[in-house]
Amino acid sequence: MAITKIHPIKSTLNLAIDYITKSEKTDEKILVSSFKCHPSTANIQFLKTREDNDTKGKVLARHLIQFLLPK
Image 1 (cartoon, rainbow, N blue to C red):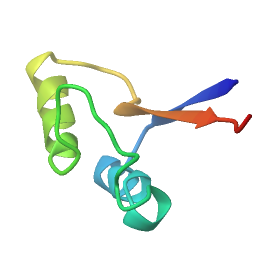
Image 2 (cartoon, one colour):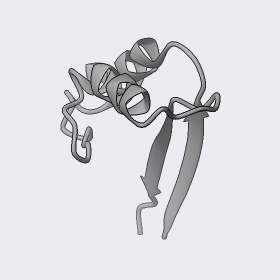
Image 3 (cartoon, one colour):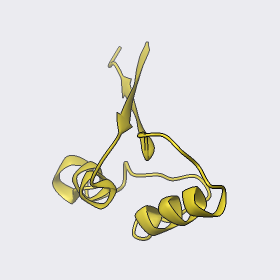
Image 4 (tube, rainbow, N blue to C red):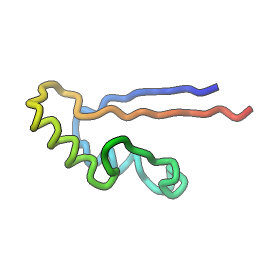
């Protein structure tokens, strides 16, 4: 069974991404994936996309977590 959680990131996007992608938490980053961006430049890409689209609101990004329970 899988469990999915979604957390909004409302400030310090770069610090959140650094924390989320820590090597010791992600099996040396093997467990890190991204969609249409690269983890090392995601914060810049996210903020640029918000600027380009004149996006309003407090949520800068969303952190998706998947847990796969052992059988």
